[in-house]
Image (cartoon, rainbow, N blue to C red; front, side, top):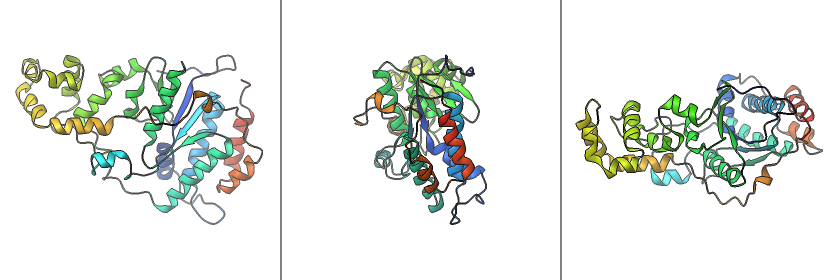
Length: 310
């Protein structure tokens, strides 16, 4: 699903919610660490994030926008549910942590609303802001390649994989994964997620999960009539029922881990997400404090300056 280029008349008025961390990590791994600030610290991740924002602002002209960051791999409420959650990931080196801090300072310099804390993840802030927007009658564009966020999609909402320029609505999610957005959480509970160390049910793959959710609708529906699995026209139905029965705790724990929070108490109305595109008067000096190079700063400020009038 491709989106047409916008003109001033067709500018998108939906809420843009940016999953910042994934783009910072991508830049960290893809851009050379020879890109440094005045004191020799790497700024590759920061520069990549900055250029991503410049392009998004220039091409999409967002008027409602928020940026969500991940603060920690090991301190969210999910680690209390399962200490193994994301335990397979290495902590960010100090050079990258510094760039995360500077990325948030960059957002301050541009007057962009941003969020992060150790209790919740970026996904949870995005989920909460999707709900804030929905309650006000607005739809959201989630800027992320992360399929986990598909569970948040409602009418009018989109996921935009910025790097691939791939746009997914609810129908596209169903076509791609075989389940609806409202079933994505239970799909993850069944198949798990090796990236986040979510176990799922060992032995249940995507095909079996799709067949189960097509037949029963939800994880609760499966366990409400587990014997009916035996009558499903799938290979190994008896084994499948046995796996579901033996690993129910793992499935339910996986669902808790994969479930995105949508009710963080932000005291935030959708008006808080309004952005004029006009950075504070001292934006240039604030951006220089991050260590960004002159070119990256110019691209950001030019994108803001050329934002079409609301």
